[in-house]
Length: 152
Image (cartoon, rainbow, N blue to C red; front, side, top):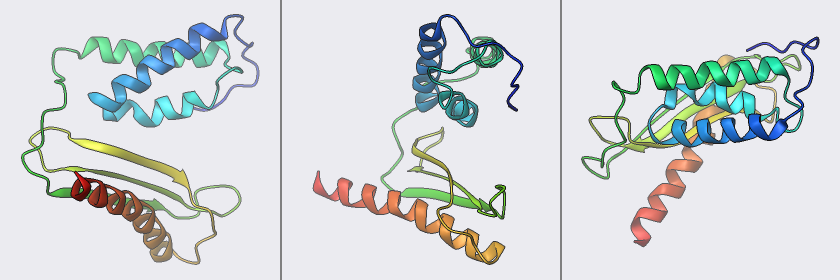
């Protein structure tokens, strides 16, 4: 997923944005494994290169190639919330770590409704502190979902 500065800009940016938008929708419902790639590609809106379009097409080919093995997200078994969080310590050039995680409901299939992947806003002093920052970020989504469920 590295960037290539030598690849020319696309003449038709709308084609790339349309394809990436479709991939974002598909990733939200049935293919969570493509979300990191699609999120990275979404940062290229209005400045996508030919290489970026090739990457998006490869993701679409993956989706099309395994469409028989994936199923739509099923209803959850219960409203028991399941979440995970992780951090990559000092991942970025400025020394900041990267948080990631998911939040969803107990289910036999993927029933996640939140996927978190972001650069942490502060420099962590240790890997343990980076993990706590990631857990706090995911915890915000858990708290939001808990309040939303009780309202309805």
